[in-house]
Image (cartoon, rainbow, N blue to C red; front, side):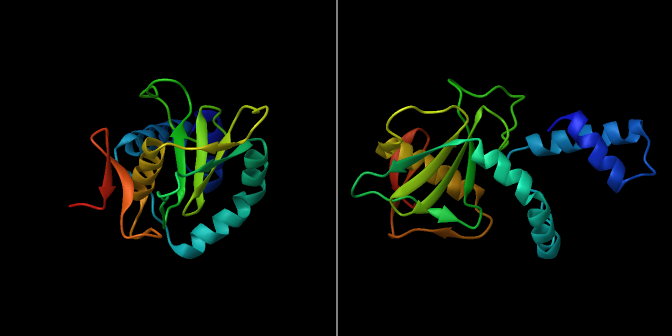
Length: 176
């Protein structure tokens, strides 16, 4: 996310590289990740090993968040996928072009479906009072669209059709 966080890790992995080479690599990675649909893939063993190494820090960041429960309207469902966590902009308006979502970023909301009718939302600011909300069809469609667009191979739904956003309109789908 930042040069200060990237540098010590990159120096461990590439001890022979000078700072100029690492800066170039940092910029290349940032440019790559800004592309729509950019994905970094690695073998499953490395992925699991890295997940276990990062788990304590990830737990700490997730525990700092205030967790809310969103409920779909009675006749609508959330979907999930093989990439079920959505990191979305929590600020007002559109995010700046320089924004990159991250679990530690206060402008990021962490969303994950925990069943066909419920989604958890982790926000950076404490919410006083009720933490359970009935969501609109538009909000369900936006979440479902985010999940389906991130899926690598599989989308899971409790019903044959589900809401999604198509050009700003709520549509029952999937469609072509």
